[in-house]
Image (tube, rainbow, N blue to C red; front, side, top):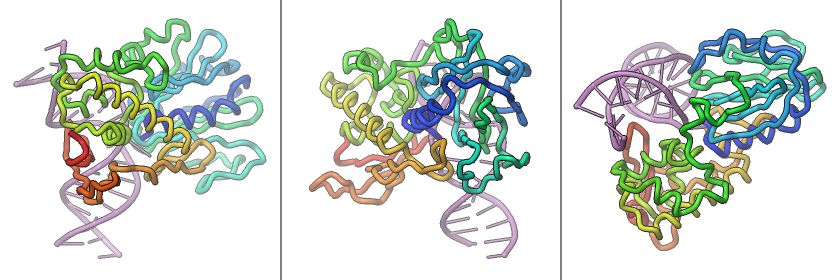
Length: 287
DNA sequence: CTGCACGCCTGCCCGC
DNA sequence: TGCGGGCAGGCGTGCA
């Protein structure tokens, strides 16, 4: 599942093929995703010209004419596949002109230039819906999201305010999308390692210095991951089918039992379970 | 109010 | 080789 860097990578893949195109046809094979796809989903979007392809947290937001916004969340296992006529077919996929597709290809959106966008999601934890573009920030799915971690207004001061007085472990607070938008299990683990903070630290106990390190760590890990095209675990790939590379740069995530990569540390990476999620950390470097 | 366990759904990997 | 259990990138609900 895609966290912010993977979602941003998908967004960047969609942007050039979608912006300015008109939607010709939409096919909803399954509407029982995490939230049901609205019954008038296809009717609303059919024939609309696509505007900006944006992102908020882990949501992709596709602006469409007629004051509409297509909202996409990839959940744990969602993928977006782009099929362009005349281009190489996706590995394991059917050719462009074959009607049949993978059983997990739930929604197809085709543009007038015959580009086909396929939403595929085995676990169906993701969602796709359409809503009004105006006042989008008040939408129930978006209104409580915390600040965008890569925007300049996300500062140590802001993070300190959001963590102040909270007794939840730092790990849980950072996974909470209301604290900061876009982090998930991998990048929280990696950011906490870079900031040398224990996932078990009480959120409200961070000093200003801790917050400064944490903000820097969150920014650097997200930026590096985006530069690497995200992380490819199991089934995730970019929209054009290529794999991300950031999984090779993990320092703690899924590295239980390995040596800490920090020079002269040599301690063993541990795994614990917090809030039903695995936390990976170096018990020596992270306090 | 806050924090946390759980369920949602499928696939994969591991150990027996 | 087959099978059961545990685990997985998220998030909303309901409970203490």
